[in-house]
Image (cartoon, rainbow, N blue to C red; front, side, top):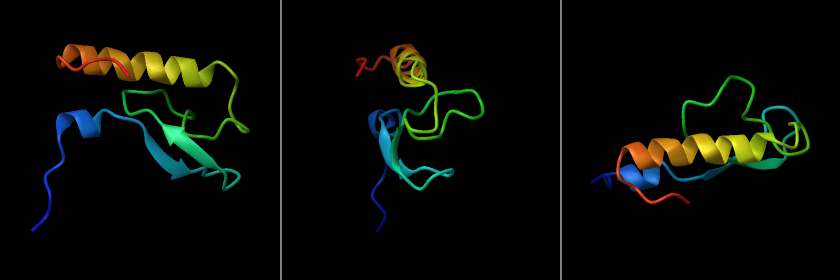
Length: 67
């Protein structure tokens, strides 16, 4: 039996591997612009804050508390 995934889990950060350098990164699910799934070594400094902002907007639309 496959465990169902909750909306809260869907809109929470996930650990992944960078597609560019192989480093670890945190992905913030939301309608994030293309090119934002790189690790902090491969991304501009402001990108993490922007991704968190977008993810929290999506969480708010669905009645979930911001992370």
